[in-house]
Length: 170
Image 1 (cartoon, rainbow, N blue to C red):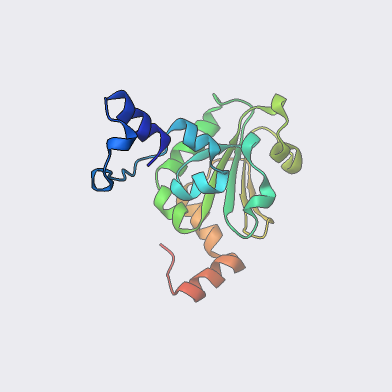
Image 2 (image 1 turned 135 degrees about the vertical axis):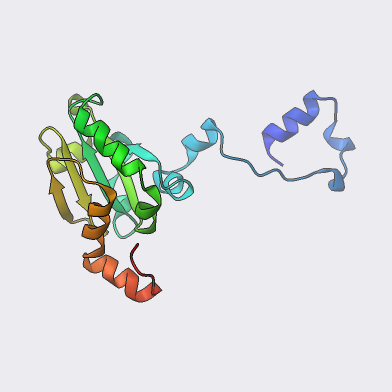
């Protein structure tokens, strides 16, 4: 039983001593905002692969051999190319999730995130990073999920995934 559940029971007139074991039911729910803040980026990504993460909360070394980062850089969140790219990514999140893609956005050059300093984008830039941490694609314009998944499916790490799991690319 969580502390929050216990507090609700006490506030509604139940005393913890009067509760029998059979009266307690474990309720599984979505993590609250407070619980989400205690999860690591990888835990949050695994629970919802469609989440778009801010570059300021990312440590790229945590993602090596775990995920394939797609990083979308822009000089402003109002950049039309940025909006278009996010819309294209959101159109087929399942195709990206099958390929272990984590989406990262950085739209604040003034914040000088570690990710921005490492990859040094100019204006709008789309980066596809393979599981081993190497840049496989650097694009100055938006790409749709079909183009991204085809690029991913040609990488040695993805070909190995396909051989090991027997799963064909979609």
